[in-house]
Length: 120
Length: 120
Image (cartoon, each protein chain N blue to C red):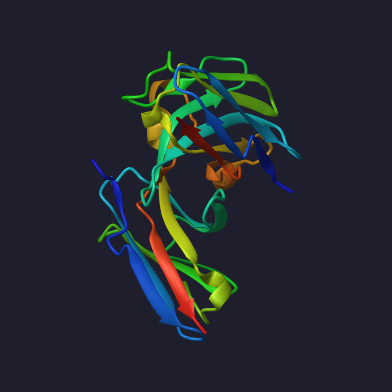
């Protein structure tokens, strides 16, 4: 159980175009999904928290107009990188929290396999 | 401001011996800690966690120790196996901080990761 998928796993796009990444919880409902970014040999940096049916909460320094997040259902969140530039090239990972879990299990996040974005 | 730190970028251990991965944190509001394992080009997978009300949690070959006064936690893997070779991230969360503004979302703050290599 607790499987999170991401699509696509790898994408190459030209500078100035937009790219959409999907994150799905396959066997559970996720009221909250998180989007992270990881640079080579660095930690996972939280970009934003996505709550179903409401606006995403962005971390300081993350441009909300550039990284559009939509969490339209309990099993799907999307991240759209708009007008992508080479510096946006990175490994993007989503995670989801199972709405059924309570107590201390509330903290546990299940991660997707990640999406490698390369902007040329 | 790196609130969760893993000061050892890498660790090399012989198969069958103990692996000890360390993590320090600075924010005393953190009350739940998790360890994740990550392979290249994949999302992190949850390993083990510990609440601040405990000082030890054990699950098979994995044991996490928490020293609140020192703001330090460690992950012990005994015996180490070649398949344990991966990047290990510690993460911390705070129900209190997550409740700021009335929104509890259990945000995780990750350390930089430690690359563990277990030699046959």
